[in-house]
Amino acid sequence: MQKIDNYNFTGKRAIVRVDFNVPLNESFEITDDTRIRAAIPTLKKVLDKGGSLIIMSHLGRPKGPEDKFSLKHIIPAIEQKLGKSIKFANDCMGQEAIELSATLQPGEVLLLENLRFYAQEEGKPRGLAKDADEATKKEAKEKIKESQKEFVKQLASYADCYINDAFGTAHRAHASTALIAKYFPNDKMFGYVMEGEIEAIDKVLKTPSKPVTAIIGGAKVSSKISIIEKLFDVTDNMIIGGGMVFTFIKAQGGQIGASLCEDDQMELALSILEKAKEKGVKLYYSGDVVIADKFSNDANTQVVADNKIPDGWMGMDAAPSTVDEWEKVLRDSKTVLWNGPVGVFEMANFAKGTNRIAQILAEITDKGVFTLVGGGDSVAAVTQMGFADRVSYVSTGGGAMLEYLEGKELPGIAAIRE
Ligand code: AMP
Image: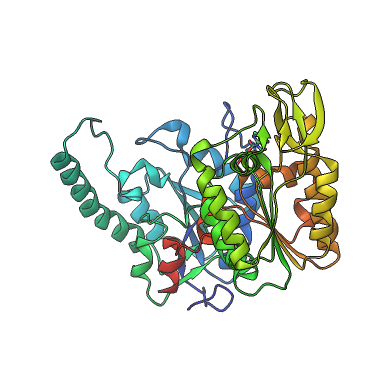
């Protein structure tokens, strides 16, 4: 497999799939440029080694060409970070893109317009009536798959080599994230973002220093079940926090008041407890909780055992005594994975447990523990607390990271490795 560090980019045009799907405000200003900053080392590497760049990405979920989803809005940010002016093709297909890419000189950069202006990028038909019959749907699907081949072929024709650095879309088998790779059998590679993500997750899944502890929080058991089960294979301890705890507590006969609960997942919760026992994983899911009399930051609060919550009250955060227990486990660990907040951290009064986890992770990282934070809300928490630079790795790819942790083969990764 080719590696970006070993590849000879001299005189080559590299087409790079990045994730520049950044949030924009109403004036089309970028409100968080993390994803652009993350891709810069890969882009600079190609330029520094004598190559030229064709950058491609999606932005938002357009249904076709739409000005508000144009990548032209982010040209100034890219130029500022690369320290040079860049060219822009107003359409990722068509004559302009062909000519601009063909005449690209070493050191030059071309940005292609939003790939998702074409349905072929995702390979899914658009504009089908909701009540379309099966035959119509099938025909539309076949048609788009057929035209997708031309789309991929043209994208590939712009370049001599392909780099995938968009971890956030690695779990999608799209034209630019997976299908294009086959045109570059000996000239395809991961960018640094992808390399970093894969290495960090493999450090937990494949070659962890023991003991390994996972902290799984968030709202719903149903959305975390596959990761929990997969992680039983590699973890020694699992701390379960957040709203999903109450499904476990209720399943065991506890009183959870008005706390979040998925009644249809209670059986599953019990089977998880059983499985943990079988696999020898120590589970920490119960303790004192901070409860509130309404779902609001200015609610009245008290601390009670999580199986004795009065009617009308709801569990909102892990109590300090519970986090004290977890802290001991975390300080004895060598590898820690954190996904999901352990309370309603969007409300300051119920963010204390989550914030303490962020703080503890920062401290143990200083002592040599490998700490990986992934999944939208725990990343937000660790960033909000100013600890993003103090943990070992913060994963940028929410859905992709979860699928990788679940043990699924991601199309964007497989396409490079094949
Ligand atoms: P997830 O996307 O599954 O990681 O869930 C994150 C969400 O879980 C956040 O919006 C939190 O506010 C929410 N959450 C965490 N703890 C609780 C709780 N005890 N009750 C209700 N929601 C919670």
